[in-house]
Length: 126
Image 1 (cartoon, rainbow, N blue to C red):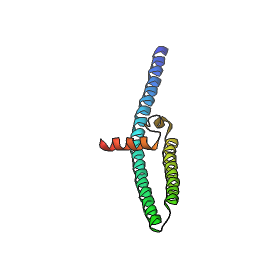
Image 2 (image 1 turned 120 degrees about the vertical axis):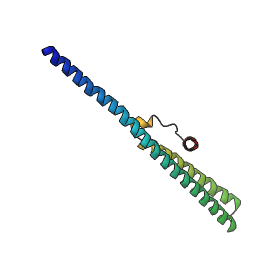
Image 3 (image 1 turned 90 degrees about the horizontal axis):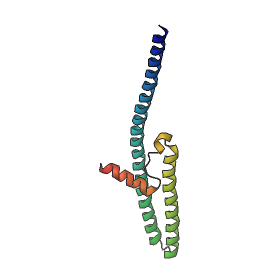
Image 4 (image 1 turned 45 degrees about the vertical axis):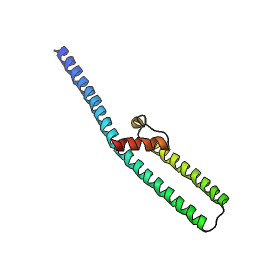
C-alpha cells in the first residue's frame, strides 16, 4: 500500500515538473514572438527618425549655403552632425539590446545600426 502512495507521489510530482517545464517553453516562445514584433516596430520608428534627421540636416546645409557660409565651415558642421548622428544610432541600438529580456537578448541578430537595419529589411521582405 505504501509503495502505491510513493508511486502516486512520484508520478504526481513528475507530472507537475513536466507541466511547468512545457509551460515555460511555450511562455518563452510566445514572449519572444511578441517581443520580436515590438522590436521591429521600434526599429521602424528609428528608421523613420533617421530619415527625418537626415532630411533636416540636408535642409540645414542648403540654408547655410544660401546664407553664404564658407565651404570649410559647412564641411565642419556636416562632420560634427554626422558624428552626432552616428552616436545617436549606436546609442539607440545599444539601448534596445540593454532593455531586451535576457533570454531574448541572445537571439538578437545585430549589434550595430547597419546590422539592425539589414535585419529589419530582411523581416520586411518576408
